[in-house]
Length: 300
Image (cartoon, rainbow, N blue to C red; front, side):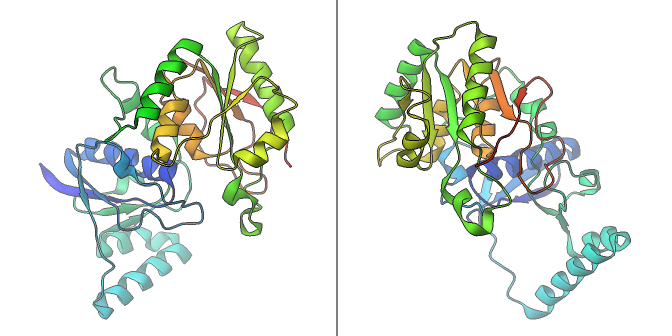
């Protein structure tokens, strides 16, 4: 087997999963072992303390500490800075540092340049690196220690077959994250209507998930008077909510990788996604699978 590929995870749980699956994509292409570096998992503007360690992974987890030898650290930083300013220098810089830094958020046009023994880091927000894995009949993300609450809710979801709605608020409400945009109640109203029409059931129950349930109750209670607002107990973690959202008949997602993953893991379900992912930024290339429905984004 070739020298291992190491993928450095960053951000919240959704972004960690994108990095992990991109690493699997590259390791499979190269016939190499994959190492998963969790030393930076909670870094980034959308990090919120959730870890991929909530899942049972077959790959070896490592914790690479930042290089402390000044000369090596300075050289790597200078080379990476130079390659960001002079794209023609990127290949040489990566070979010298053994680090591949993905510049785009979505599809990385240079992912094929990663060689055995390299460290890869970036966001890799594209279904392209995920589809060949999640389409396998044996694929599943298994929780390491599911709570009794989660087990009970999965049973309830199998019975009710609800539309799972995710509303991202929380850190998106911060001034420094204003370019991401928060989707308005009108988007959710129209997206739920699309999902119900596709399912052929105008009264399909709705379960609403959010990182700010009190605020979302205020925003959506009148629109969805019969909705259930899901409030996980303290012993539950974010991974449980993600997997629980993948157990519905349909997913209405926000512009959040957290609910993107719930939808992609929900094989065969109806998915409605916002037509514009970011309010004031370029959308990641290759993020939305072609079979998903899109609903016009309306912003708060």
